[in-house]
Image 1 (tube, helix red, strand yellow):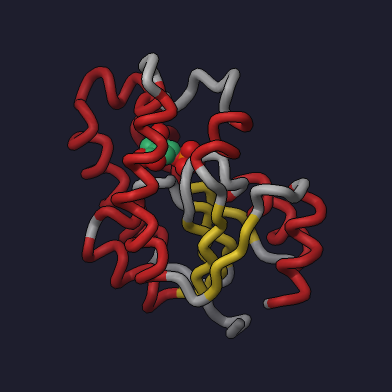
Image 2 (cartoon, rainbow, N blue to C red):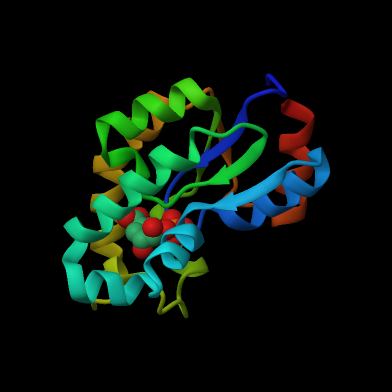
Length: 169
Ligand code: S3P
């Protein structure tokens, strides 16, 4: 990894991007930027409210604009939202502006990890399992397209994943 650029984490909901990102940032003495928190801060509303008021397309527009601004900077660990890779220009910027790690989990592991989570609007429906499988089908190729490294977090604690990743970087 080139220390002058960024370490960028992509991957599905529940893969550990924010949590492992925070630990990696501490470890490497970089600042953590969490794109979802940044979108909420700039909008002045939590993500479920953004989805409610502006729909998914409104959220994606905010996500795209926020990431374009954030990626102008260097020296951070950037935890992106699971859908950040949907936008082609964002994918290009992610590739150009850092070393991209795809944190991978299976839909079954996501289901377990997110069983009690109520903060993801895309999962606020009874057929969560089908949604997660469909998102994986659509997005896995996009994560693969941008990633320099794929790392499986499904069977690891955040601490163990951070240790192993730090050795690989
Ligand atoms: C989303 C993932 C969420 C958040 C929003 C949409 C997605 O981020 O950006 O709810 O489309 O997968 P996390 O991946 O951090 O949960």
